[in-house]
Length: 301
Ligand code: 3HC
Image (cartoon, rainbow, N blue to C red; front, side, top):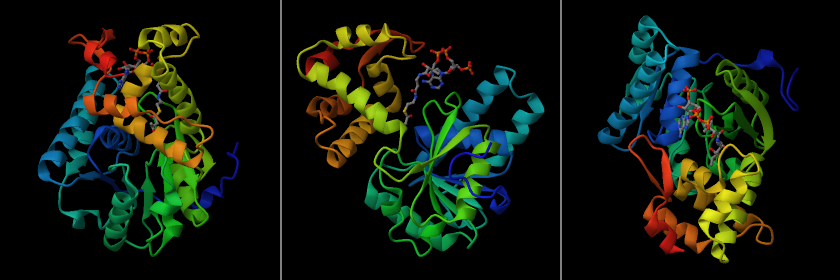
């Protein structure tokens, strides 16, 4: 069944080389997915060689884990590893048909990235943004061809989360949308087409849940009580585990964006910003298993 609002599949363009801008947590997770599922060359770039190298190393580690778990055999592992490479030379993006960014969540930074890369790629290349909650239309406001920009929003952990929000702006054309839908399918994900509204669909709901949980702490309930209470209603993770998973800085940014868009419906939280600067909420053992709330984190509030 064709998802609501999906254009004719026949308009989709082939994706034979993928460009990933940014080499952080989300970018390296979806770079791994692109190479694993599309089996095409994936080139990764970032501001400097050190970031590029650590991004490529992260993708290799993920591929290695897949190999160890028996999900890909030795030949496949070798082949996929050979398809991934990093560079600070942006001209290597010239023949990418699909360029996706997950750089810092700041409008000006993303606008600049796309203005720069639009000049490098060919006229048929699709530009995609993994923004969590910025307006895709605004990100593309300075593009010469905003019709080829689309939101392509993954969820963390990318390998496990089945959904991609495909965000259509007023300008996104049918060929771009069809390519995004086909790409999501080839990545073996479920795609929904959402409006270009703050938080799209999922983050708007999550921001509500996480914002309420944080506000409960801000107004005097302990972290432990909120975590314990919500764990018991059967969520896969407690709100604070989820905040730490998506990243405290990203979480704070998402809440701010929602508060700015809908001040009467979403809380802002100074404490969350302080926690984001501190960097963690839980103490964990060497294997990443949660031992309890970090004492300093709890004192910040
Ligand atoms: N990173 C990567 N992979 C992880 C992980 C993590 N932090 N935590 C667990 N996994 C993997 C495990 O390695 C395992 O993989 P495998 O099947 O290949 O071995 C798989 O997930 C299942 O792990 P477990 O059995 O240990 O754990 P669970 O059954 O509890 O599942 C979970 C873990 C899938 C992360 C589950 O807790 C969950 O669904 N949590 C909710 C996540 C969620 O809501 N994400 C959306 C966040 S919002 C977002 O990203 C948008 C952004 O814009 C802010």
